[in-house]
Image (cartoon, rainbow, N blue to C red; front, side):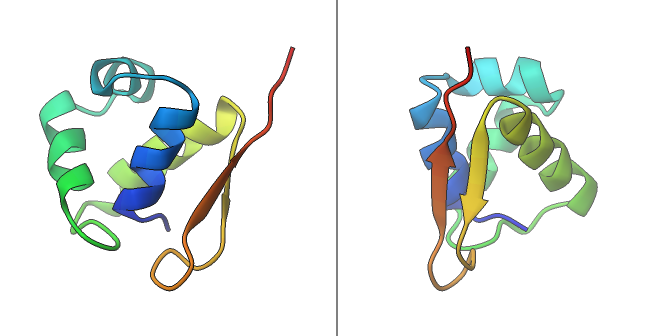
Length: 79
């Protein structure tokens, strides 16, 4: 799973707006904003969270740590 802070951090590392993540992941921008405002793991449909996670991973993001205790992200720059 992933936390709200990991979503925000990943989006920031990619220099993406909420609209860009929405378009690339197929998740509505209002839904993304709602998730990013929550603490910890968003109260969300697991399929929606997985769509966000897979989209970010496909663009070089690696999620590290425990999403509740030690959430982190790494950007692997690809050419």
